[in-house]
Image 1 (cartoon, rainbow, N blue to C red):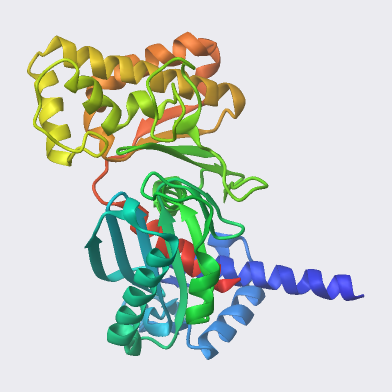
Image 2: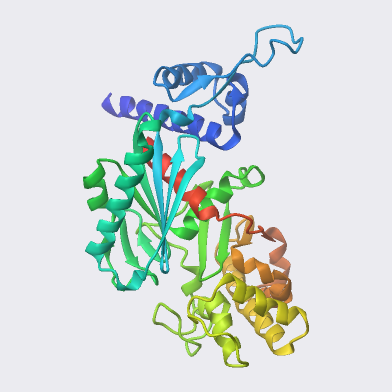
Length: 398
């Protein structure tokens, strides 16, 4: 009997979260439309939305049919109450900490960036900085919301999301740091620690054009190369809380050194720092932190290639081929519906495209490629922030 009750409660919780996520993804909807959108019965939608409305998490909009001349029972749309709760999103990358405050609908209302040498931080120093910044944001803006719900942290590198631990990050000089526990203890809220590309993938999945795609790989190319896997419509983290370290799969065991310390990783050929490093060996370029070239420097390099510099054009084509070989291996192993290439590195897709598809053909049976769509998603906004806010909100509903 207890198992039956437990299952019933679990189903109710899943339906509740689905309704909240649908409103967050698609915006205001009438209850009947919400039921059709999710495949839920009218009675289920009515019961759950009544509870959510009583809790102040949703509210009814003005009668949309009142002045439209439509006869019959009015269709009243419902929407999430943005002031019901807030979350704080933190993005940790090389020499930068970005802090944002998101409302209950997932909109971002505040942003602050702190520049510092992240590799010189100890674990304790990092925790204290995060505590100070979160406290400041909550003290300044927290009164605008009913409650502070959660903290989400997007990390460049390898994390264990199950334990909230940074295993390794190129942004830090230490490894195996539990971020979740001290922050959760300090603020009495759940804390989710996620890989930055997983956050991008979650944000992509929220886009209307991808909401019905059940299996896809989102490959992010910029300062590094990362990947998010969506399997059966869910973010796939494997048994250890993190998978899909696509950028650290091998192209050649004798290749150039990667930031992870190994040699021949895909990232060591395709990322911004890899391309700029190799370009510096061919020509004299402006001095910079070669491991973290600026966006302007990467754009200038791409422009040289477009103006006919054959050495730089070959560099991008070779990087594309390495990426294509990795994509071919991905097709052979998983065969997702879509492979989406995004990130600021997509600025040079035109220079890499032929190499990418040559690499795919070299590593995979060409007749089998047709089942997967490979496409690009322009990097018009940093989807990491949006994704970590969504993850924090979802984590707080559990």
